[in-house]
Every structure is written in structure tokens, then in C-alpha cells.
Length: 211
Image (cartoon, rainbow, N blue to C red; front, top):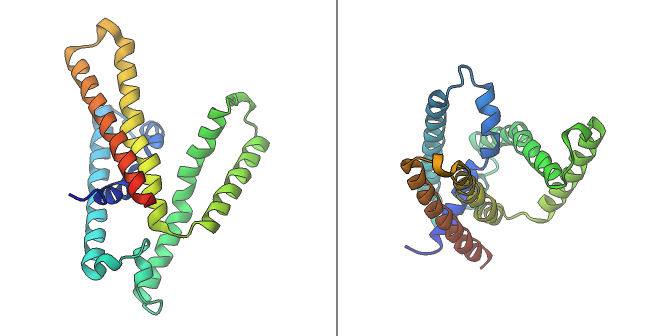
């Protein structure tokens, strides 16, 4: 297996970087038991995985190594169906962007140690305009979507999927002390393995993306 395949792994990981919204989804879920939330999550991940697999396979079978970072760019601008797809993607981005942006804004304020009670509407608006300005400036200069997807997946995707959750879980097990069961301790060991795998994928993926 070529190390370049890890670039694809990093790109695919961007599909699952909305983990920070999980607590909110759990709270808003009707009859929010852990078993029901697990079922909903499993079905959702399964559907999204199938869609990604089908679209990726069809794109590669159609264009091979000539696939663009945004596959719609490979099609003619006169194709009405593809034009409708471009419009659908634009709508999807417009309405899904706030979900990710709110997490980014709140996370930035957390890093700056701004207390909840001081987060006035004025401050939130200022933070929003500042972060949007930075994001827009970066989007203006960085136009290679495949590079953006691979780097963001390698750095942020692997961190949110493999590294941070495993560290949090191991920390929770450590805090339990002697109360931790044998099974939980084994899961803690497995979490360490997942953590290492995530770091390795991130390191190699980032290196291959920059080449």
C-alpha cells in the first residue's frame, strides 16, 4: 500500500469532524437514551459512509487520476444536471457551515478563557466577524480543495476522530482509579493504541500532502 493512500484517508476523515456537536445532538434527541443515540449515530454514519463510497467510486471510475479536488469541476459547465448539483452543494454549504462555525467560535472563546457570562451579543458578533474575515481571506488565497481537504483531514480530522477522544477516555478511566472495571482498563489500553494510530496517520498524511 502506497503512503499516498493516507492522503485519501485524511480527506475521508473530514466527513466526521463534527464530533463536538454530539452532546448537543444528544440533548435534542427525543427519548435520548445512550442506546437510542448509539443506534441513530450508527445508522447516520452508515448512510454517510455509503454515500461517500458510491460518489468516490463513480468519480474515480469516470475520471481516474484526473479527478479534481472538487469532482464537479470535471464536468461541463453546460451540463444541466451538474449545474443543479453545484447549486445543491452551495445550499448544503450555506446551511451546514453555521454548525461548524459555532463550534469554532465557541472553542476560540474557550481558548481565550472568556467566561460564559461575559459572552455578550456584541462580543459574539465581533468574534463572528473576525473569524469569518480570517476564514474568507484564507479561502481567497487557497483554491486547491484537494490540498485543503487532505491537510485539514490530516491535522484536524485525525485529532478529532482518533487523538482527542482517546485522550479524554483515558483521562476519564484514570479519574475512576480503583473504581474502573477490568473491561474499562482494557478499553483504555485500546484507546492508547487508537491514539498512536491517529498520530501516525496525521504525520504521514501531512507529509504526503505537502509534497
